[in-house]
Each structure stands twice: as C-alpha cells, then as structure tokens.
Length: 264
Image 1 (spheres, rainbow, N blue to C red):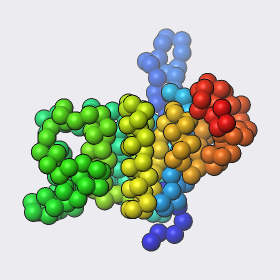
Image 2 (image 1 turned 90 degrees about the vertical axis):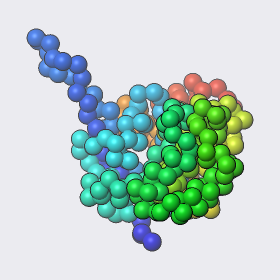
Image 3 (image 1 turned 90 degrees about the horizontal axis):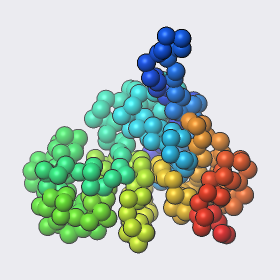
C-alpha cells in the first residue's frame, strides 16, 4: 500500500492563450489554474467548489491526463503522471462526467461500453468480461440484463450509474467526479450520492468531487478546497469551511446559495 497521499498536486498551473493579438496588444493569457497544491489520502473525498470558470474542471482534466499542465506536477502513488503511459494511468484514475447520457456512446450497448476497458486495460477474455460486467452492474445497483440495452433506454440516474460502472471497470483507485449529480433531480441525486459513498466504503476508493452545489459537497467531502480565479483561497473540513468561513469569497459563495450553508 502506498504511504502518504494517494494523489498529490504540487504548484499546478494551466495557462490558456487568449484571442489572437491585435496590432497594439500582446496575446492575452488566462491562468485557469494558478499554483494549486492539494492532496487526497487513500479512501477519502476531497471536495472542490467555486463558481463557473474558477478552474475546477480544468484541474479535473489535468488530474486524469486529458490536459497537460503548464507548470507543476501531479503525483499518483508518489509517481508523476508524466511517467505513466496512458494505459497505466487509466488503471489508477478515472473520471465520471457531468452529463450522464452525453458521456455514453448512443450506438453502443452498455455491454460494449463496459467491455472496452475490460479488454484494453485488463486484457480479459470474453468469458471473464461477461462475468465482470455482471459484477459491475450489481455494484451500481442495475440488473445484469440492462447491459444489453442502449443509453437512450435509461433515465439520467441510471445513465450515471453506468458511467460509474465504466470508471470502476478499469479498477481505478481514484475517481474524479466532475459535477456528477448536477444534471439529476434532487431525489435521484441522493440515490447516486448514497451509491458513491457505499462504493467508497466497500472498495476503498478515493474521490475528487467537483461541484458548484455547496450542500452536496458538504454531505460527501472530508476536506474542501474553495477555488477562485484558478487559486485555492480556502481549505479545510466542511464543518469549518461552511460554518466558519474565513475568506470573503467563501462567504460570498455561501450567501449566493440560499439553503446550502450550514445552519441556514
């Protein structure tokens, strides 16, 4: 077992070039992520909150290798992700996306969607894949025969369960959850959050949970990072962040989300 944090982020920066330069102005640049350092212990949940455009999703995509950092580094199990090949990285960390239906290929059955990582990442044969798919469907609370259906046949909550099953298929230890319940009705949100917490207990998963919904993060996170303009401006346990915020931006976030703050 790896000692220390399972994932560590050190002085991470991501700069985007802006529009084309004008005659009198240099090309402007956007520091979407600006010197972020964070860590996620094994089996714990780090919540990341902030307004749209604060850098949350850019940070998420760098964690799973979809975007390269401009500076800084990300380590998984003490090893920089730059030292992982694509296959090895996918076996350590996976992403669950905001749009449960849009993230699934409409032309593929659930079985084909789940078979892809089982074959490519784990090298399982057809019989082993069929057995594992049945296990995965059970893990996320879906009937085994649903594996032969197409994405359009499922509700949003069921589709997100399939997205979670796809992430679990790689046997990753870390799930980066980018607004995973924001597209769902409140009652369905609660069911998916309960599923995630159950899976974490059973499988020892570590989560990076990104959301604009403070109440959701308050319910699931062990530690919370508040991001503003690419920087982490406040960090701590939910009880402190949401009940006794120190930073003015955190207080503004709480005030702008009526009913989300503790004790409101």
